[in-house]
Image (tube, rainbow, N blue to C red):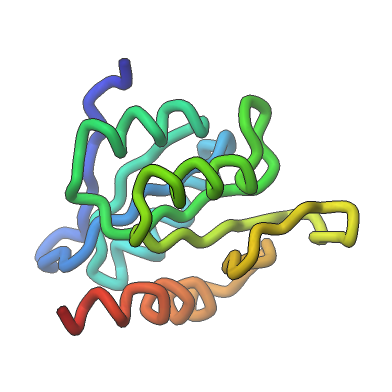
Length: 136
């Protein structure tokens, strides 16, 4: 069972959406959270695919998952497949510090953000993935 996550928001700003950030690198989670909070999003950290699944099972208030591809327990591609099966309409963006090659089995329609990325690139991709949900 996962511990209760700390949901973070930028002080003084109303968070309109909550993003689950999944990466085994704590510094990366902190950096990504800082960028997203500056854009008005709430963030929840998860440091493994298993923790991410536990958090999603506990909360239906997560609007998007941003997950690293290369993690020690379960890679991001497998996490994507699991999440698509369990949470059909949940937008997911995968991040990778390694090139995605022909040897990788990339799920159809996967959104991949190549590390290192600029803050505006991250914000733009998140906005694009959330756009259909914001019009509901």
